[in-house]
Length: 260
Image 1 (cartoon, rainbow, N blue to C red):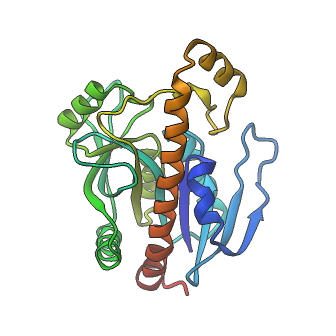
Image 2: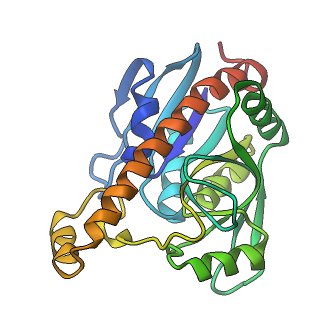
């Protein structure tokens, strides 16, 4: 069984719609401030479980631990949006990750979490055979969004990463402790020259805060054009990610987990 960890509902929605025999599993800890739901089913005959982590490495770590405690997961994937840190990487293009890097405020040397080489090789094979536009490289996991183009470029230069996310290292940490195969597969949302705005308009679980959105647009009315465009980009990117995953999961199920 494969475990796929998303941060946001919009990232997971297209793939969740493709699940055969989909079932929502009741969380083990209903009293938790943000109990996680698990959606199990089949993609191309391969059993999978999807879960939403929320935003940030700590939430991703907690969600992955819950996933592994409840299901017999043989490989876990961190999937969802990422922001480009280099030129020539466009919205909707995929990033097959070699290593997830995580730099803490105390230690500026990034921790490195290698993705399972067989999973990256299979992903590359699927991309080549099905005509997907992909980039192969490292991603950087951060605890706060990198918004400005100049800061994105600097992060790319300093770390060598091609893109940035906020969850990959959290999933990778748990996978390493559990000694199960891990990989990150991301889709570009914002390009390197695009300033990222409105990141505070959702809460830590990825839910829209309408009061904050109203207040923000009251003082930044012209940003509604940008936010509508960003939403269109997000929908298109999530659809492309789901299209790739629906093919790739079948390949992984056949060759890695043995689940059919």
